[in-house]
Image (cartoon, rainbow over all chains, first blue to last red; front, side):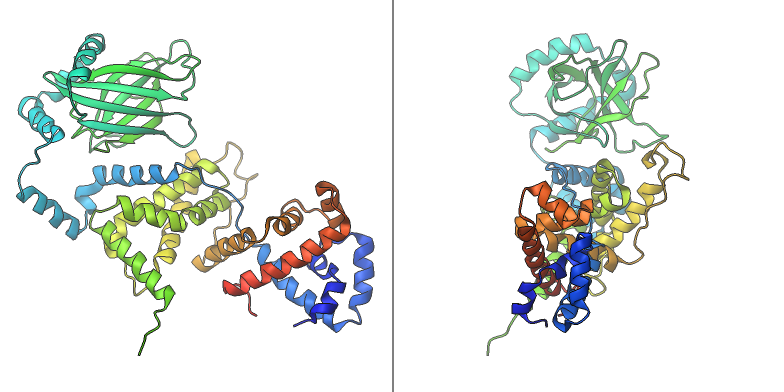
Amino acid sequence: MPDTGHAFDHPEAAGYALGALDPDDRALFEEHLRTCEQCQAQVAEFSLVAASLATAAPAAEPRRDLERKIIAAVKDAMMTEGAAVLPAAAVATAKARAKAGPEDNLAARARRWWQSRWAVPLYAALAGAAVTAAAFAAAIFIHSSPAPAATISLSAQPGFAGSGMATARATQSGFAISLTVTGLPVSKSGQFYECWYAGPDNRPGHPQLITAGTFTVDSTGSHTFSMWSAADPAKFKIMQITLEQPGDASQHGKVILSGIDQT
Amino acid sequence: MSQTRDPDLAVAAEEAALVARIARGDVQEPIAELHRRYGKRLYRFGYQYLRNEGLADELVQETFVRLWRTAGRFDAAKASVGTYLFVLARSAAADLYKRPSSRPLVSDVDIPEPAIPDSVDQIINSLVVREALDSLPSAQAEVIRLTLEEGLTQTQVAQRLNLPLGTVKTRTFFGMRALRAALIKRGVVNA
């Protein structure tokens, strides 16, 4: 190890190893270096450090909400792939829960209600859902229902901005949805945002989507909407927001916000 | 007689237990904990090789989704959880880069494919070096960063920070000494 006292006299050893000395300083230090074993040893040590520094990863910082997005992405994957890849232990847990009997909470009751009424004609019924009437119904039922059947935190997909929060409450005729969005870009003339429920088998080329309604946002980028859907959030756990243009009723726009039921 | 418990082994066992919980479908808390431990490194790895914040975000998400998918097959006897995560991240980075929508809108000829290290050790090494640099007192780290990342000479650093040249030289010297100690501690360079 180089002598510490001597090294303090020649702090240029560090800058030299980093290639940061100005030409005059470098020439003077190289002159000294020819005959000084202490500084030669010091430069050798610092050169190893400088070589390591060249491999350093960039000083990038992840966004604060990344953890929440990761957990949502994993739960999303569990929803869409769970049956295929669920480990044996998790399957056993699920079976044990099933054996223990049906859950007795609002979401479970809503699910049973939905299964008893809408299991077969679901898609046909949804196609006819009227958004205008829904707003009226939602306004009534949101106040009368004690707890949401679904709570979905929406986060921006890569390349997009904004966030949102949606709650769905069971009513006698379906689900009343309250959606609040913030930070969305203004929807241009002729464009509208569309809210979708995605089912467990939704994937590219095999859409399992149900529209919950459309809306626009002004320059504030923030709004709260009341919508209506017969889609059971216990089954259609994923909510997506896309930007669409008039045309057929399919989803064409990229997914801007997405989230999964957290209840 | 008292036994000394190896802290590294204890951490490895703790993290293996977190992966076992994920394998049982208990994802919320274990993934949050593993993200707190490895999320920043994974993000930096993603940013290093994909050069895009959104894709780096996506890489970290995809890595944890792949962890969930494969948690039941994780074997703590073969690799640590950290190493396993970076094996998954490397694979996810390659897949993300191949995805057409991830490519910049310029000719492939103009943008060379980023060199993803073959070895997970190389990846971890680059992240550990960054962490060692981050561990320095800010005054020392700043002069080294300006040299390293902006290619400034010591005179230019002195002008940028409005400091005497001698102060820049001594801060660089003590910073490099502290960094060497940090790298030795982390096993990146030999004592």
